[in-house]
Length: 404
Image (cartoon, rainbow, N blue to C red):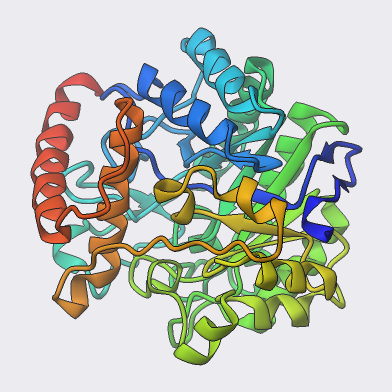
């Protein structure tokens, strides 16, 4: 079975199998951004899942750039002991564990920041009331942000994580630099596709320099942001070429932003039948990608995953939400082709809130595992959403007193 075979990455690291736990926001940190005992309990559970690779939820490189109030922040080594404990917990079952590094850019709710930064002063269009207009970054601030990614990566490796994943998807800061909709600059960091991708490539280079040649450096990239006039497949392909030149060890394919939530809501029914939401893109990019590919989104059965890997289109199958309700799913998938996830979330009945509501419902299940409890599949999506929005608003207001 191909899924069960090890995969050697360009840096020399060897993943024990081809199933990965993809990044999901945990929202379990203290208001100042420190990991907690809940992270350890959660990742101890996922360490026993059977996955060969476990990727953390997005860890923020700047304390002022969180998109949710209880995200982990790594700016310095003040939390090195608990970060090390987190790495030990996540690696306790034999999997490799990578820390995902991110900066929210303009995708910061107004309750958390009234003056976020971004490549340009382009505010969120469909969610304008909840997000403030960003301030354009200066050239010196861009240089400093590149250094922040490198510093956070260095601390992650010092704490015991096997590698890092740079989040360049879903409309966050690096994705904002890549998109012509959100990057209206005409300088060294924008104006044409080559200059728009310069920030991502500079981050990759700085991170590689900070962690060394033998540590895994991965990137999560949108196939498209699914917005008219935005980051499209042609530009994405060009980024893949450049990432190959940069020596990236693994490329995870995703898609969408907060304004066009393909990563939350998936794909048309024809694609759902094939299970993998972005497999068509992966098949096209395979011919030019010089690094292993990971695909996350929609994968549910061992048969579909085995077919995708055996075809050569991808090298690693990413699982996110199914592992919340079925933490042992990877073990069952690797045991035989008959295994399939039966996870079925509750959805809110308002179509416009479907993507956000489902995400919040899963976040509540993650919190239950972090408290040492079992998931509660019968929980109402509306009740989960109401509880989350109240708690998140209170946490955001309280965070302002803690983080200045």
